[in-house]
View (cartoon, helix red, strand yellow):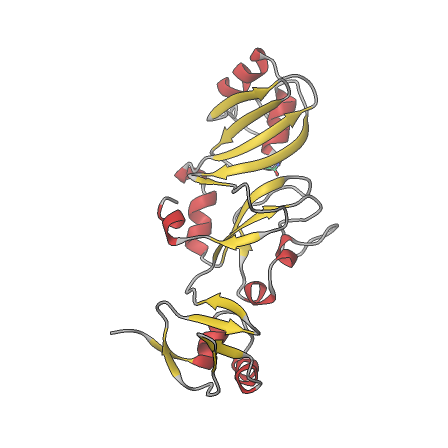
Length: 235
Ligand code: URA
């Protein structure tokens, strides 16, 4: 049987505040479905395919939130940032209220593909080294990347504090100073430390893919979008 839920509870589940705030939102005539203003906060609705409009903005009902963000520099991936604003400040308030969290961390000066979710199992699966989800980075190096450095990254480099050499799953030269480096773990400053151990230095770092998911060219820096069901299937 189709699942029914009261409007105020639906709004609450989607991050629009507590039940009292959601009731007030409805009574202020700010919530609609299909262009029709809803007036009864206790009216029950089916959830499948439901698209709420709040202040004219579409909010498709999502039991869990799965998002991608094109992270700009100057943002920290922490909920309690120290020196720069959090990436969460780039999301609309209902998503922040839903306790959406970054899937792993990118450094403050790293750009590119960052996933966020309020699904703890999804987050765990993607960051656990056991699952070997490849993260691909576009690395702009300070010096030309020579064959010896690529061979070292593939064979494994010794990082301080790591018991064993760390290998790249793949490494492709794109131009003299740009490589694509694929890693299946996410150790602290891993790309920067690996490049340094190979005798080079990272000048700019951008994550361009996570598993089968690529950073879309049309997603501007600082922009976010929902992940589609079809994209989640492969994760
Ligand atoms: N490796 C790094 O050094 N920094 C990042 O942000 C991600 C991977």
